[in-house]
Amino acid sequence: MKDQKKDIRALSKEALRDFFIQTGENAFRGNQVYEWLWNKGVHSFDEMTNLSKETRNHLDEHFVINHIEVDQIQKSADGTIKNAVKLHDKLVVESVLIPTSSRTTACVSSQVGCSLDCNFCATAKLKRMRNLNPDEIYDQVVAIDRESRLYFERPLSNIVFMGMGEPLMNYKNVLEAIDKITSPEGLGMSPKRITVSTSGVPKMIKKLADDDVKFKLAVSLHSAIQQTRESIMPFAKNFTLEDLKDSLIYWYSKTKSKVSYEYVVWKDINDSKKDIEALVKFCAYVPCKVNLIEYNPIGEDAFQQASNEALEQYIATLEYHRIPVTVRRSRGKDIDAACGQLANKQ
Image (cartoon, rainbow, N blue to C red; front, side, top):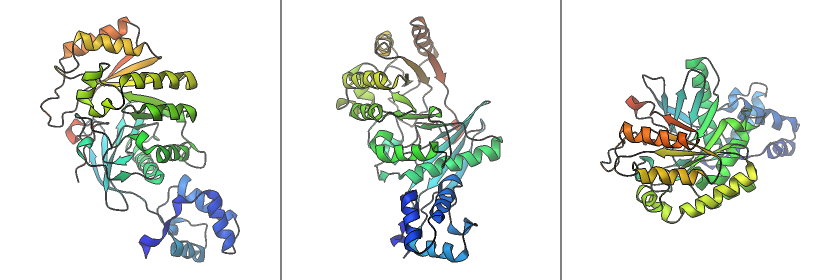
């Protein structure tokens, strides 16, 4: 039965070489298969054209390639492309291609649903079904790279883990996927072009630092006042700002890599002078920049986009304190594809 076969992409290159040795073939066949799987991203053994038909049939008898399928594509007027991605077990996640004049960015998912309970996020309304495997994360990137080349005539330039799920709650698989993405035997992308965005899991941020990762770190902060942050992100009761601060100081001491804070400003929630002052104080702990994000409503009346005046006050105060700040406008509004607030439309 197909379902009983092992997914071949769970095997290392060494394991593939051993498989061919045990079946009486040359070990280098394992290298060839590994290249087809990861560098060329094929989804069937028949596409491995430098292998004999007999060898391809032999692989098909023992293994399966549990690849994703882009089940539905929605294109926004601003060029943003949203993919509904069907997994081998029929569950669906989403990924987004975000183009600008100089780059194309893939926003990818790491879980089906999410482990956390951010009140403003569409994905948080979904039960976490399971973690994505490394190959499922990798496949999202490959699919968006192909779309980038097809629609914008340039390769994918950046990756952000801001889709469905909390990446640090799927730590092992996310790091394995990034290892494949950055490997010369995979996509060969620079880790400096990859950003992992977390809601703030202090223990795992410290682990990232200990593991000497080379990608960038972003934290969904949204408030530097503990009580306010808990009202926005209830899980923050267990992951306090004090613990988050300590983990970020540790991160910077080990990596010397500045942190990006993702920050949505909402009306009557975090748009006061007190909120701004608390953010400025929090930004003093480690070198950082702040991305102020335009909110993409999900039907929760409690969360409404703050006024332009409140946003301008944030910008002016941060700039006065020489804290780098950008404003990220919501992309793909006409297809509901704001990266980081992806809704599963199953």
